[in-house]
Amino acid sequence: LPQRHRWASKQSDLPQFVIDETFSVPGVGTVVAGTVTHGTVLPNATLLMGPSAADGNFYPVSIKSIHYKRLPVGRVVAGQTAAMCLRKVPRNQVRKGMVLVDERVKPKASWEFNADIAILTHSTTITPRYQAVIHCDIIRQAARVVAMDCERLRSGDRACVRFRFIQRPEYITANARFVFREGRTKGIGIVMETEHEFHKPGADLLAKANGGSGGTGPGNDGAATKEK
Image (cartoon, rainbow, N blue to C red):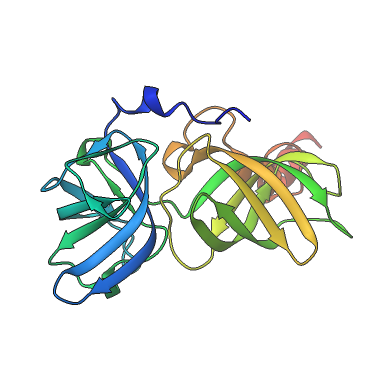
């Protein structure tokens, strides 16, 4: 099968490394393993690591050395997996799902995001406040539906939905594909925009859910009374 990503075209991007394993090596320090998704990462480079579980911010860290296929290397590029030793970073400050990214990207963690989803299997109906586990790249976290562009969803339906993470904010970007599940319920989706992009047209799901388009919200009650 052809690869989904064209890694050669991403090697000129700003560097980004997704962490999927963490280790504490005696005499070496904290080591993280993962995949370079964009750009080129070099030893002694300084990147932002986050989002922190404590406050969701990103903090600068220095890469001491890089190993690829158990051998020390001078660089790794997009599409390659590697292990990196971080300089003076305690292991308890690193977790699976964090990223190392260039500061010029200006990364921001998000609590909420809008997504175009499709329900594959579900025994009943899905309404706001429904919870499921999001699997997006290396992210694994429960999220709650806080708004929808329809009243309810059943198997085979498709809709635009706003999710909110339960435990902590995550670094998630537009066009990222994900799977969500809860029991025997399964669905797929693609991220349309994060909470930092909700000012875009078409991202007003909360307004619609609260009665902005003919619902029973306080604003609509007042308009109906005025017409009478």
